[in-house]
Length: 277
Ligand SMILES: NC(=O)c1ccc[n+]([C@@H]2O[C@H](COP(=O)([O-])OP(=O)(O)OC[C@H]3O[C@@H](n4cnc5c(N)ncnc54)[C@H](OP(=O)(O)O)[C@@H]3O)[C@@H](O)[C@H]2O)c1
Image (cartoon, rainbow, N blue to C red; front, side, top):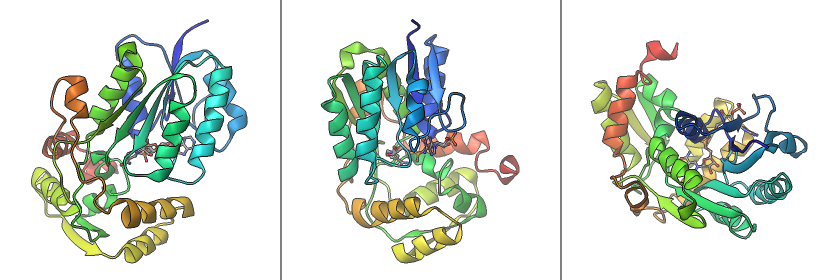
């Protein structure tokens, strides 16, 4: 029986990077999402077994977010099938300060399998691969007013931490809380990106209600609107405004700063309109 590593979230921000790191280092992976064959859809548990077959470890990135009310049940059901299919170690990507995420984490911790929880702060890549990219490309971004700073983390760092958890059994059964090295507001981030792309980006502070209504006009699904409200109205109250040293402790080097993230992302062309079209 081959011993593949299941990657749930093949095309996602972290899944893609974790998969590349494993493959580059000679590990066999089975990376899945709704668009792969076999497919993996969090809404179709009847198909999970086939996706898991032949795997002994799993990197799990839940969609859309562990904060949503149905996540705990889905993770519980996932663990049941995983155990039946011979998966022995789970690395769960989680978020900070979210009740729903912590309930899902407990399911993994109490599963009887070996585990790691990689509990990460807001991704810097939300500005380049997520819901804020359009605003950056258009030079005009409207976000809920907030002076609450967040230690945005570079997803490349998350992938390296997840890779270490998958490949180093000595790290088993640890919850690793990881953040970027500095606390920044959204306005600070937009200013740094603007400096790195050498173009003005106009930042407007709006209410959460106005923000949600603009996302609704862009046809964001109801579940994502619920999530955005939860993140901006509940989670972003200062509870996550501390830096941790998880990246440095685990990888033996400092976490990537938002400036470094912005510099390399600008150099990659990800914020150039030509590259997007
Ligand atoms: N964003 C953050 O700042 C942040 C911070 C901390 C933790 N997290 C955690 O990261 C995870 C989400 O990350 P993300 O928002 O950045 O997304 P992402 O990892 O970039 O994943 C997006 C991909 O998920 C796949 N997908 C969408 N719906 C799916 C479904 N029903 N079943 C299976 N695959 C599906 C899609 O690929 P296909 O179309 O190919 O299926 C899509 O390309 C959540 O678990 C969240 O708790 C996020």
